[in-house]
Length: 242
Length: 242
DNA sequence: CGTACGTTTGAGACTCCTCAATTTCTGTGG
DNA sequence: CCACAGAAATTGAGGAGTCTCAAACGTACG
Image 1 (cartoon, helix red, strand yellow):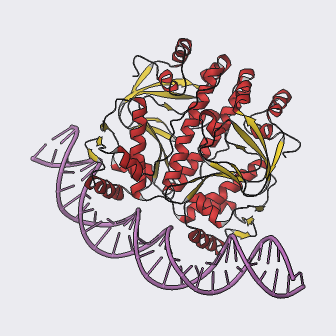
Image 2: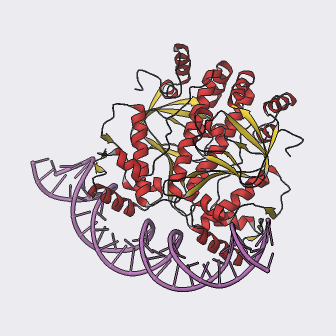
């Protein structure tokens, strides 16, 4: 996906049709691709924020270390996602970002984005659309984590991953790779790793989820979505006005 | 605040200096002001989304009703805030919005925002800054709600309110009005109202918080922030590039 | 083959929830 | 100004869900 076509173009095209010109313009944004290893830190909370990046290959996540020693995973980034747009108006990174596995990234300076705004209103709108989608994901997650049972949280996490992967690749089947340890899932949904294990065991016994060696098998996504109380449909995106 | 100066101009000026021209341009966005009563619904989840609004006076909140009958408050809006930017790229409202008390709003069509993008790169950047600030608030809240104790959640909520009010009004003292019932606080932090009551009682005994008739008294904001594990400093905003 | 890491399982403790009864606050009309 | 009704807040008791600690097991990798 990332080779033939720029990540940004690919990503933006979810939010509205792109002309050939738009694509070319977006591709000029992306610098050369850098290989990053598993576990590598892209930046730390508090670092100076001057650019964002696109994730060509590999998975990443943003996290914060809290005062009480716990760690919390705020976002998961899948291949094709844009990382670090969030700090556009901040001097410092609000959270650290690390790679879940080896991958490829390309850096883009915020400055270049601003140049883009000057050129194309349509691409500006698309950029805002990317923002509001990310915000929608966040608030959806907020609603699903604060007052919900372990079963609902885990089901929600798995279904969100499935749904986002499917969005990038319609042909995605029941089985797919998910390079997350139970520890990391726990950090993402705010449970103890022990209880994540118990919850996954329960799901396995009920035939909802199978997991092995970094692969996930969802025989019945609909039931899982139901378990996770997934209702809203974040996929009704308006065609940006001209 | 809202009378002499447009809400949007006031709100945007937190993110960067505005020229007189910018101010005038922003003020042309806002339509005439409408009075809304306590408890009035501005819109429901699923309604068509074509405009956002600015909150001149009064408090509001966005919420969702979940399948299991519980209600969750996603955001609080204070006087001067902008409501509903989030659905910029969506056809439908992602959450309902209601007034906590009587107030005044002004509607702005998304379409007008797009016209603005065409005119001023700087105002476009500011608009994105508003977005990223809201997103930062959300992810901060996410980190503070998922794996934290009742004490931490409540302390965080109260401190966030204090800090946002202070941002709008530097002269804010130790006591200020907070028109939230314990039921609503519970819906905002994902606890039962009963437990919110117990937690507030504990805080009161410890001299951290006093509450009476819609007023809040924080004799020791620093201690409260510590209790709520508030670390990050969402106030370091970069002066947007030209 | 050994070591390290991730996962599973068990037992006891603690936090928070639910339900229900009581008290306090708030606003209204007499 | 008082009496009242309705809402909001408090308090208590018992129970469910999740946590922590600890040990055993499995799997990947040197």
